[in-house]
Image (cartoon, rainbow, N blue to C red):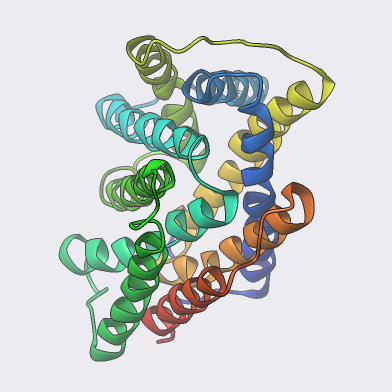
Length: 292
């Protein structure tokens, strides 16, 4: 699939829909964490996505492992660890905080693209954008430093670690998998190889896998597995294979906006001035980074 130089209308529409889904996904994870251990829940999600995608690929006559399996193992390890951190972060912090930090990942995308991808250098305006985005992250983290408990600070740090791993995964995919396998295989490798990683981490963390399950929790898990990990990530990797990473990243700043709104609407999370300011700084910084 040849890479396009600019985003067309189809790509823009797909990105906006993805950001809406990913914003609401924070609420779904928060709900499922009430009955399922977070890392175990992430593993179940990968099982659902890998099973659905594997069946779809076989029905359409596609080989499951056409090549680059070693690289698939690497991205599966990165993918699994990323979501172990993200799901665990929501035990300690709010959806809005976690999603603002997670979607600071274009900050890391820009740095990775500068050093590891050809033709995507950091320019002066990108440097200004990076400083703005980083300031927003620091502001968000600093609001927990003086609290009696550092639990929410831990949750924010885990979410920031997930953002870093997302960027590393995307850069690795652009260097090693794009042009070698289809976007279907990119997602299949990530989900299938993340399964043992997530269940092993769940075991090492001595999680109690299932506390209780009701209709709401089950619906939440199915939403995460089918809509998010299968369908939305398949669309995302199609875009990653077809368009420059820096252009795609410019739109992901919409996700924490939707996540913040969903947290306020569905989880009655407070909309503080610090949260709004950090969201503005991160969003503005990411926009400036990618405005060229």
